[in-house]
Image (cartoon, rainbow, N blue to C red; front, side):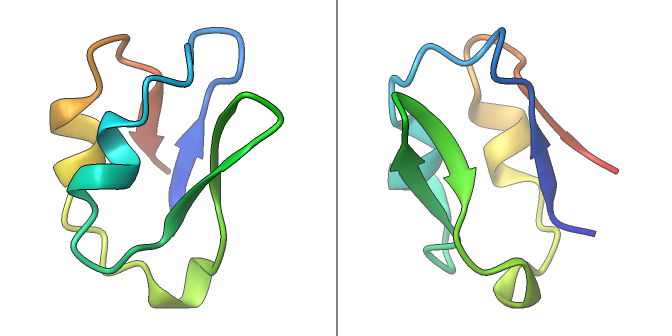
Length: 58
C-alpha cells in the first residue's frame, strides 16, 4: 500500500518529496500527494522523515 498523507497535518514542507528514493511523492494543492502508487516500495522513508507525522503506510 502506498503512503497515506493526512492533508490536515501536512504543511507542504517537501521533506518527503526530497527524501523519497522512488520519487513517488509530488506537491499538489499545497501538500504532498502520491503520484504513482504502483512505484511505492513501502520503504517508510517518508513516514520516518515527516516532521509533522502526517504520513502513514496503510
